[in-house]
Length: 173
Image (cartoon, rainbow, N blue to C red):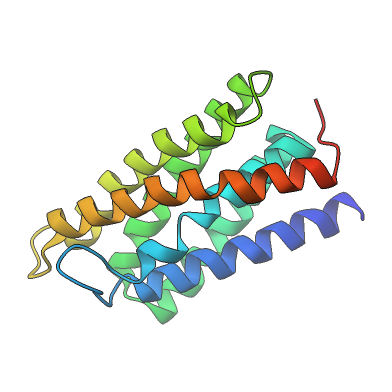
């Protein structure tokens, strides 16, 4: 698969994850959780796999393409405030994820995806919920805590598909 097609495939998957999350974050599951908390953490898995297999340059390209497309579509399908909050949080968190993952890439197989996702999840949650819901009726602090809890749980769960992917295809160094 050519670099352009590969980037497009990863970016398309990223757009689906982010766009669905931006729509679903508007629908609480409880006082502590929105539906978006279930889908968004998989964006970190996607970027980590791209980083492992194709390096940080490819991972950053996926982040940039996903950012632009998801921002435009989210502004149309979600609200402008959620689109801006999501775009800002996404860009900061995903780029942090790429950087931390790349610095840890030579460590044990589980350390780069877990540590990078943990740091990125904290940043993403803090930025997104503050920008999206501060000053609104939403119980955004409790939703942020619930969201972060789900992100951390999915970060652990995502180690399984990450390990399976490593077993199926030899990653780049």
